[in-house]
Image 1 (cartoon, helix red, strand yellow):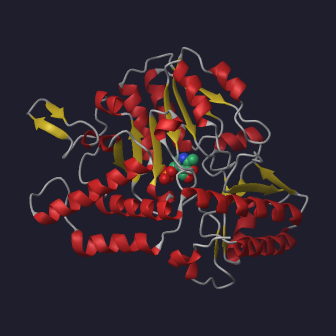
Image 2 (tube, helix red, strand yellow):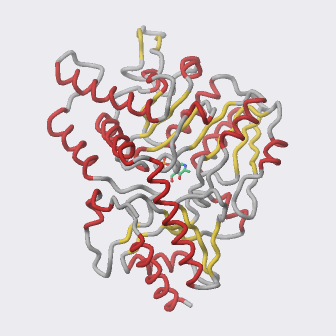
Image 3 (cartoon, protein in one colour):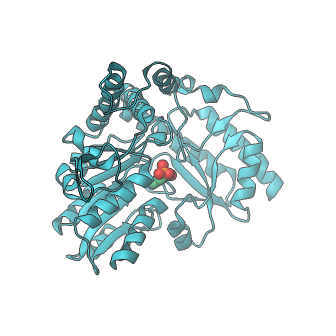
Length: 403
Ligand code: PLP
C-alpha cells in the first residue's frame, strides 16, 4: 500500500494517550508541508495586493494569483480561466451559484430539485430563494443502500424543473452519485445543473465538461489547501449574464455617482481584496495531488475503506453501517445500537482517535433514517492500515466501557 503519511507534519505530533489517528478528513484534510511552505513563502517574500499596483511586487503577486486560477481551470478541465471564481468556500460558492441562477430569471412556481443526501450548504441557499421568489423545492430520494433512485428522479424532473443541485459524493453515506446521468435528465428539460464537489475533489478526477454541469463548487481546505479559499466554476456566458453578488473594488469598469458598470467574470464576482495566499496555496495543493495522481488516491482510499468496513463489522453485531452502496468511497458512517455517538467519539478522542459524531450537516438524511446522528470515519491519502487497526482496538475498548 502506498504511503504519503510523511508529507503531513501534523501526523508526527503525539497524543498523550496513544497514536494520533486522524479519521476526520471529510471535515477537513490535513495540510502537506509543501502547501504550508508555500503560504510561508508568499507571506515572507511576495506580499503585495493584486490587480492594483503597477510596481513589480504587485505584478508578481498578481501573476502568482492568476497562475493559480489557470491551475484550477486545468484541474477541472474548464473551457477557460474566466470561468474560475475564487470564493471563501463551497458554501459561499453554492450561495453564489444560487444568486447567479436567480438573477438569470427564476420565478414563483419554478422547481429546484435537490437530493435527500445534500449537505445543509446545498439546501439553505435554495430555501432562502424559495422564501424570496416562491420556488418549490423537491428531493430525489435515496434507497436502503444510500443510492439515489434514478427512476424517481426521472419522474421528478419536469418542465417546471429549473435547477438540479446535487452532491457528487455524499459526506455522510459516501455514495458517488451518477452526476452524468442525472445531469442529462435535467438538461433535457433545460434545467441548470449545480454540482457540490466538496467531497469528491480530493478523490475523483473532476471534469466539468464530462459532468455536463453548469456550476461546480469546492473548498480548498478539503483538498489539502488552507481554509478560506473556495472555487465556483461556472459557464462563462451564464457568469457574464448575471448581476454581481457583492459590490466593491476590483469588480467595476466605471463608477459614476448614480450608476456603475461592471467587469466580466471572474472580476465581477471577486469584489475587494481576495485571499491571495489561499489561492496560491490551492494551486500548490493541486500540483501535489496531480503529481500523486487522483486515481492512486482513489485506489488507496477504496482499499482502506474495504478493510475498515470488514474490520468494523467484526467488532459487534450491534454495529450498523449507513450507506453501503457499491459505488462509495472514503466515508464510513455507523451507529452502535444502544450507544450514543457523542459518548463513543469522546472515548475515542481520549485515546487519540479523531472521528466526527453527529448529523454531519445532513439532517435530512438522519430525519429520514429516524436517527439523531452517527459516528463518521473519513479517510484520506495519509491514512494507513495501522490507523484502522488502532481505531478498531480503541473502538473495542470504548464499547467495553459503554455497553
Ligand atoms: N458540501 C459537502 C458535501 C460537504 O461535505 C461540505 C463540508 O463538509 C460542504 C458542502 C461545505 O463545505 P464548506 O464548509 O467548506 O463550505
